[in-house]
Length: 481
Image 1 (cartoon, helix red, strand yellow):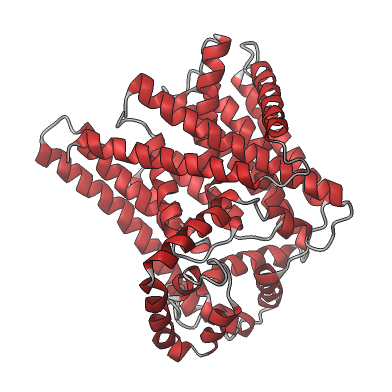
Image 2: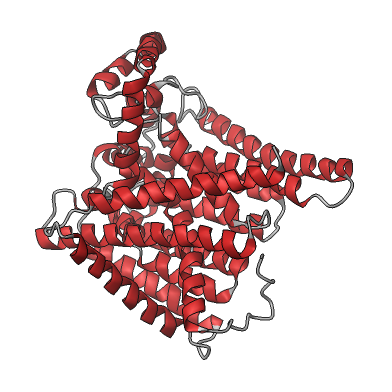
């Protein structure tokens, strides 16, 4: 198989996933009118408004410094407004972690170490410890929400900086503004989920990689992200594969010499990544906060068992969860069930299709987790939910446009940093085709959708407005082409 075919296959599968996404999201729109024309008109009005807004924000007279300050203040304001106007209370797993953090903060280590919840899910211990540290200084939910606002704003800033770095200032501005406005990135500010902190570290690692920082540091930061949320493993694998593909397509010197450099770089990335994970896992065990460390998973097949459950379409199953009551016999009982659920290929294909729609096309559950039982105005709740769905369609649509335009005008360029984002998204789609799903799990890859969509909208924007590029700051490196 030639190099070009491999690359085009990656682009093809990306377009396929994005196209299936936008089709099902459009069908899933939950609003009063069933008339398709009305929906298309609304989408047109949203796009037109966005076009005018971005034309103003990309005015040549607005300096990079002014825009950067504006973006930070604008993002902070939206998120502060949200946490003070939406009374989100910790529920479900968030409640368990929060109340355990309160006890840990007082020195009650056994509240975590001997808690059946953390024995089953040791990966949630680091975030609980993080909350305990914050609660030690300010014993209130608000303190954690304010930190969410800060990290949420830093996420917007990093999306802007990554986009600016790989595609230039004008595209960076558009992408930054999209990330500041995208509803879920605001909504989750009031939810005590570990994803916000994890996303920050993940984006920091991506920015450091494209900024050509030492790969030892990149691996260490990715390890911190993984420590907070294990799904970051997909990002690590995506970056690992991307580095290999870059070597295959860009190798212009002696094969063995460049291969040695690649091997060394992969070693730096993987070495620091696994070393930090193991050291921190051992540290939690040494401090007796975790009995067996953070990397010991007593129920490794659980997510797969639930993900293949046709009764719940891959969502949480009380029946499957009951098997975890006895950790010693869980694997023994789970494996035959998994084999049985994989046996009927027709039912399995139906399940995978239904899971794709539920996971990627239905409305985001952010409003559910944010409003909990405090919905004062149902109309506001419905408006935010619908607005998020239209915005999501916009992101996916612009993503498709970007991939198609990239292929048309540049060919499947192996130099494109966006290939990393496609790899990670495809990895997530693959993992959640068999693992337990919740639409909330989309949160951690929204920044990647935004980076791709921002580039797509920028291509359309500049071609239709004939707007020239904005002068970069002298200290800014040249955009990666």
